Image (tube, rainbow, N blue to C red; front, side, top):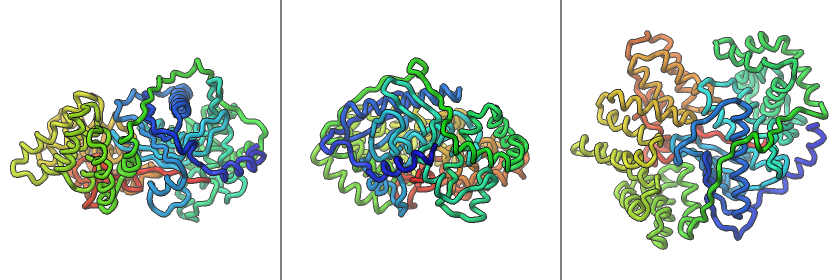
Length: 541
């Protein structure tokens, strides 16, 4: 079936991802789980937002899991940038195959996709990228138990192969047509390599293989084949109990060579099962649209680049652009909030505070203005003559934000930091605040690393290990995953109940001060920045 659809899909890939309308206006679409910014028509962005909420509801329905409704600032913010070239430019680096990417951070998760294309049936590839990334976000947010890599990517591909019908029906688990070329022509990943990804790294380290396609195929096969019903969960339980992935697979699936032959036969089938969910089975939230005023729309390019994460050189360039726009629109709170962020990134704390104060004075609902002011005050407090007073002042904007959004994770994190940065043992309520922040943002692995360090310092060794396991298993975790594994190895030799003090910098925590921040550069932006290995990118297969 996949081979039959391959040629049709290949033509779609090369059509390109042009913006829907060059003259469209910037809109913000706001719903329970998403905020979308797009230079597109009101009708298209509304439908796109509604489809994403239906997709979220479908994942809840199929998995039986639910995400606690996030605070407004903790929703996934999606920037529709217009083209694959723009995605690559904002992502940075030299990877020419990036089709979209997602940066998970407490209080500031950001996804960057090419364009909006509302299609009946199988979605546009840019939409598939977003659905894949949101599937990861959802699954991480609803379980602290790490999946093996093939299972994690197979699940994301399974859900991303969705279909949105005009009558409101949503199809989940359709054949992954976008992996057709990979499955047909890329070098095959054998079943043992698929189940133990380290074998690929050890043996070849190549990129152009069929890992993603075969991960989807195995996940789909185990989900819908009656004879294999229940085996997927049984396999995962064995892995979680410490059985190696290959041994767990042999114990659960039986002869792996037989499984491999069955997979190849399954791939050749002309028909496959799919979940078909009627509109009355889905609980999608309402969508509110806001057309951005002229100044805020003018600032969107700066805002996207800033919130993607910048180093010190990029920050110095970006703040100049932001100042020029702010000079033209001095009374726009959205513009002033973005200016505050760029001033902070560039190391100009007083200017960041002034811009944030100006934004709040005009419209006190701009949450990010409180955040940027808090960041700047905390950085100034490090060198203050009277630290206690400085940190008390630095907590003021975060306390104000907490009063507006009780479940915003950043005020909780910075309450804990207000003690740690002064070398004071945090009280129990501050430790509870950090734990609560991690519960609100389970997708922020840097935050969980800091929670584990805190637990180790309290002698809660087993709890620290539990916090670290999903981080170490994250295939896109980079330095954080390595640091988590190093800490797990260290904790195996530590007795329960005996405090183990760990230097956050030695452990691989980017900030060294229990922060959720991802620092791109030692003299650059910190809280607003992100290193590449803390974000997941999806490439065309």
